Image (cartoon, rainbow, N blue to C red; front, top):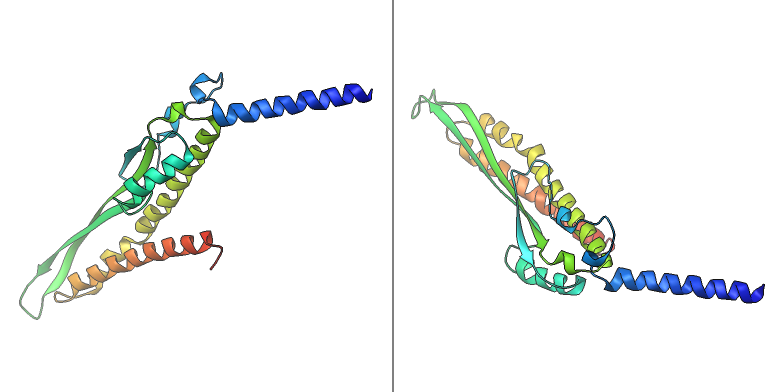
Length: 199
């Protein structure tokens, strides 16, 4: 009985080691699993008017992280990034007179998210595919918060302009835009602080 138990433990240990080796070393294209690496490339960020990609070609996690430092942080300012333009226009009625007032304020914005895309994902191990999938999901979540900050606060630009007068309306609009940008920076600062253990 003892020999049977020992043999069973040995067999199960072999199976576990084999599975670990498969997960770490065998490219997903050779595995009979329902894994679709191409689907990981389809990133949805609610509220973003465009999602663009920059390609990375590394063979594994460490190579990809190094490549993102060069192509992401080194070129666009982050592994993934949200950028937007806020514009406004309004009309001055009775300009150059004491009766001048602001009307028909319009605020527009364009928001774009840029995220890395792993071109050689099918050549990666299952472990690296799982890592990449969770990484991309985090990027989408993080940039989605940035987009939501814009959506939640862009109305303040119109409010600020309407509260101004013919002389101050533009300056008030610019001030409101800078306030939104500061909220975005504060969010990134808080995320960095939490990642560093609350320091």
